[in-house]
Length: 326
Ligand code: PMV
Image (cartoon, rainbow, N blue to C red; front, side, top):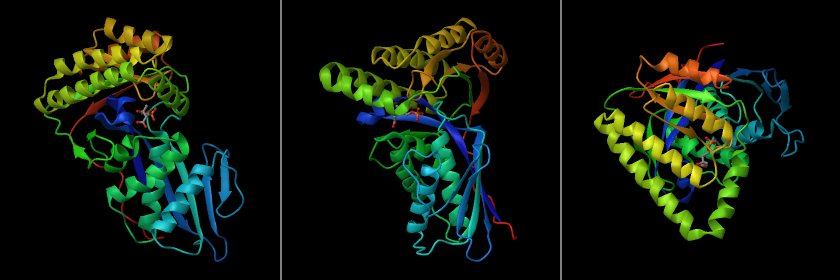
C-alpha cells in the first residue's frame, strides 16, 4: 500500500494577469491536503478509483462522460499510466480523500491530482520529479479550467513558495521573514472557468485598458517578490491592498469578498485581497501572529464560513511518503 499527499495553495499576487504572461506568487497551504492511497487488488479486478468523501466510484476503462465528477480523477490516472508507459490497466484500488475545500481557490483539483500522480508513480516504483508531476497535473487542470496558467500545479507539485511566469522555468522564493495569513472563505463556489473567460472577453473588448491593468498587477507581483525576499512585511500588506484595487478594476471581486476584506482591515490586518479567480472562494489577510486569531474571529463575524491561519515559511515538503509494504 502506498499513500501520497499534496497541500492546498493560495495565490498571493498576480491572479488573472498570470494568464496573460505577467508574474504571480503562490504559496502552499499545508493545513489542508489531499491524499491518495494505492493498494494491490486481486488479479483481473482492474483499477478502481474511489473518492469516499464524494461517494464516487469508477472502474478505469468503463465509459464515463466529461461531466461525470470522477472524470478528472480517471483522466489523471490514465495520463499517469501513459507517462509511466504502462500499457495494461494494473489491478489496483486507488482511494482519494481531501480536506481542501472544493472550488474555493485553494487548489483542490490540483492537490487531488498531485496526490494521485505521486501515489501511483511511487506504488509502481517509478517515482517522478516535481516537474514531471507538475506537467501531468497541468493536463488535469486543463480539463478543470480550460486555459490554466499552470500556477496551481506548479506550486502544489513543488510544495514551495513560487514566483511563476507562464512558460518560463519555475523560480522559488526565498522567504526571509516568516509571515502569517488568515484565509477567509466566503462559502461561495468560485466559478474559475467562468470568471477566467469573462476576463478574456473583457480583455478582447478593451485590450489597451486590460493590458495596462495586467501590467499594474505584474509590477505589484515583482515588488512583492522583493518584499518577501527582503522580509518587508508592511510593504507586502500595502501591495496586497493595491493588487485588490486592480482586481476590482477587472471585475473579479464580489460584495461578499469586499465585506470580508473590509472586516479584516478594520480588525487591523496589514493588507488584504481576494485570492484565486474571485467572485467567491477565499480572501487572504496578512497579519502579525498576535492579530491572527482576532482577524479570524472578525472574518467569521462578517460571514466567513471558515477562517484558517497559515504561516508562510521556507519549504517543508510533506507529500512524499515512503512506500509501505503491504
Ligand atoms: O481559483 P484558482 O485558485 O484556481 O485561480 C485561478 C487563478 C487564475 O489566475 C485566475 C487562473 C489561472 O489559470 O492562473
